[in-house]
Structures are given as C-alpha cells and as structure tokens.
Length: 127
Image 1 (cartoon, helix red, strand yellow):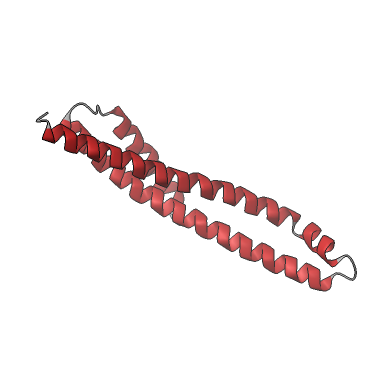
Image 2 (cartoon, one colour):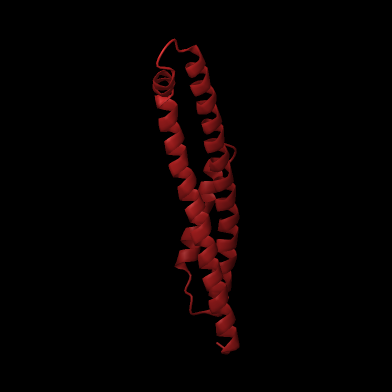
C-alpha cells in the first residue's frame, strides 16, 4: 500500500483544519475550499489504491476457485467454494473498504460543489 498511511494522515489533518474554518467569511470559505480540494486529491489516491487491492484479491480468489474446481474429484463447485472461503472474506472486507473510500470521494466532491456555490452566491451578494 504505497503511501496510503501517509495519505490518510494528510486527509485527517486537512479535514480537521477545514472543519475549524467558518463558512460565513469569504476568505475562510476560500481557504476551506482549498483544503478540501487537496483532501479530495488524497482521498482519490486512497480510493484508487483500495480499488486496485480489491480487484487483485478478486482475481486471486477466481484463480484459486478455478484451480480447486479443476482439482476436485467430486462436488467440484462445493469443493471450490469451500477452498476459497477465507479469500471470499478478505475480498468482502476489501469491497467494504472500497465502498467507504468511494463514498468519501463522492461526498467530499458534493461538499466542495456546495461550498463553491455558496462562495459564488456570497460574492454576487457582495458579502
């Protein structure tokens, strides 16, 4: 997991700093948007890595399942499923993590859009 821990530390730090800023001050709002934009970059990197981890685990499970199916003397499908039980659990854990980071990416993007719209409206109203 290349730099994932570092990225997550940066996300937490940037998010905490952004959350401290008020949204009723245009300068602070602009700073918050900049912090969350940087945060979004790191979230994207983590999400991408986790997606890849999930896909690799899926490929490993499919390979092991096919191998077990081929090697089983009888009840091939059941034998193959039993052989990959632990891999299925690991795959499910990675899928859960992948969904979590995709949701974080999506919700942060939506939050940024809302903040940018607020900033635009504030400027139009002369705040």
